[in-house]
Amino acid sequence: MAVWLRVVSGLVGLSLLLLVLDAAIRTFVLPRGASVMFTRIISRSSRIVFDLIARPARSYEQRDRVMALYAPLTLLLFPTIWLACVFGAFAAMFWSFESVAWSEAVRLSGSALFTLGFDTPRHLGPMFLGFLEAALGLGLLALLISYLPTIYGSFSRREIAVGQLAVRAGTPPSAPEMIIRAHRTGFAERLDPLWQQWELWFVEIEETHTSTGILSFFRSPNPHRSWVTSAGAVLDAAALRLALLDIDWTPDAATCIRAGYLSLRAIADLFSVPYDPNPAPDDPISVTRSEFFEVYEQLVAAGVPVKPDREQAWRDFAGWRVNYDAVLLTLAGLVMAPYAPWSSDRSPARRHRPPIRRPRQRRAD
Image (tube, rainbow, N blue to C red; front, side):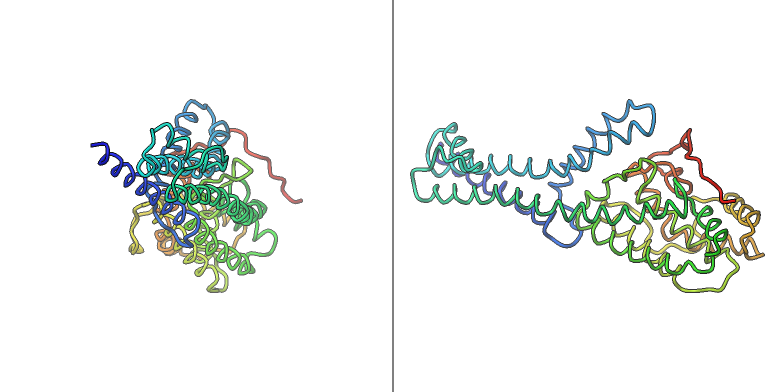
């Protein structure tokens, strides 16, 4: 009976070790989006704990301070749990192969994993197990350390564009505000470089936020900014430019929208977010017809050249918005994005009220 127990212990240890290696490789090394069950269990468990801590907070700012720690601590939690699993897996294998007491197997595993060297196996086979455990322990730590600069480099590039958008669209970002500011500064007809810049931004976040999913939950330094609400503001501004503005047509805004909704859909696929991959132009969207007409009148009052047919402009805008409407709102709720019009304010997961104190914006004389 003891022999069978030791055989089963060795097989369980080997299976656990392979599970950890698979999770580490597909989470940090594989250059594509992969849904790893082990990693998702850690992430979701950590999210439940942080949601419970943030729930009593009375203001969004307090919840934001709590949730700002979620992604960094979860990232550090990955190698911690992996090392604990490696420790248990090799302890089981040492107990299976070395025929020692369980306490001695734990001692052998700890000595090898942390390279302490105070205890070594007596036989050649378990001795190689010790060498392998030491190499894996150092490798998992080196993997995290080597990827931290990559992760924070991607985060920094993402946030530079988000910060630049605040100059054009305010905080929180607003598509109508972006169009009005562009008109007042004389750049309404020369926004093509902006659409090109954000097209590249969308392509980059699709690559970085699907290969390293935890990046989606890294929050902006400014609690009232978010990569999700910024993406929504740019996509809405591009849709308004195509559907509403009475200026010469160029393809850059359209390609920006296509890059944007393909990027958001790829990130949504990683988190198993459902959406219609081929929506009809007349499918319902979260922006109402009356809200669109309010923006229409707002642009008219600001002197922005708009198309005279409001109904056709509404149909054109809805035809663009339907491509990203569902995924934008769901991602805004998933990352607990701050308040922003036409995105997080109508998210199905969390509905935000406008901040009580809005930052004052100086108007040019």
